[in-house]
Image (cartoon, rainbow, N blue to C red; front, side, top):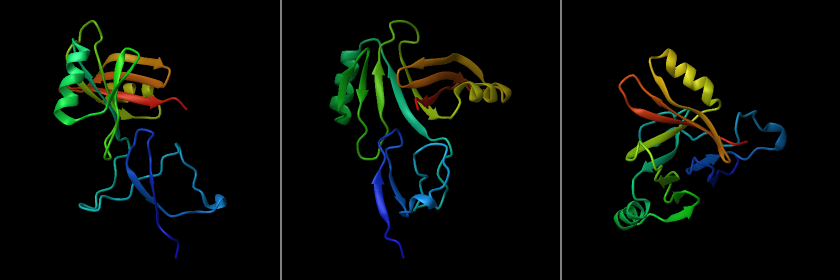
Length: 161
């Protein structure tokens, strides 16, 4: 019997994963380098195919907003360019706080990890959604915003390979 090993993934998934060690010849072909999570031990439910990988909090006053969340949740927040990065701890996901300087000023949004942002915007459109922000490339990947048929804004994210 193989020994079960646990690893911690920090590339967005930020979850403890269990896997069976394999020899190089036994490694399965994967679309990305993150091992799948096992079923939830409480419910037996299978993990999400496209998990939430990031969140963002928009505001008018970035310093005031950072101070609020640091004091409220003891979040570790650090300056990174025009945004303030929120470090994932205790199995959470990374996020950031930003002041865009234009509308929307105040918002919260989560980002779902996908392999092709444009293709998922098209799929969402075919299901009744609309594109709010088309795909935008940034140094770490590509993102877009869509509005679901009920009016909720959801982000799509593909990390740079």
